[in-house]
Image (cartoon, rainbow, N blue to C red; front, side, top):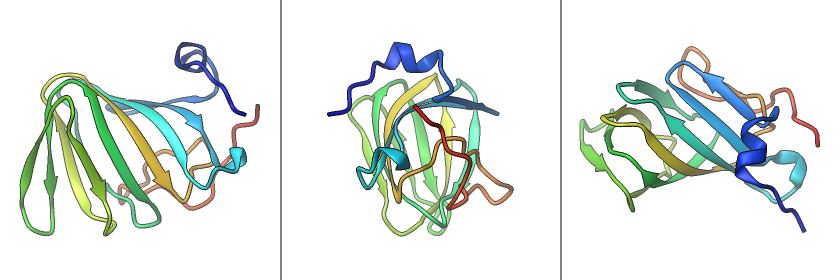
Length: 132
């Protein structure tokens, strides 16, 4: 059994900070669950263009408001408490945070731990691992 506390993880190497966001990685590749699980905060006013070419992602909004734009179609969807979206086709997208947004995120394949977005908005398949 794996048990971790979000508040403890926030002050550990499981927290990864980048421009416009931070992510607390509660489950990672080395946990051998087949997916990774993160609590990600996108800061108010941030506009993040992303394209997870190597991963599928599912996101659930815990708090805050914003929107997601699917760049292939131009469709824009509101993000608010209770909204789930899944990037099931490696969708290139933009997330805009009207307020601070806190989201639960699942990645497949799982992240190793230290990933941040590259110049194309993607995470690499392999990155430095966080160990327990």
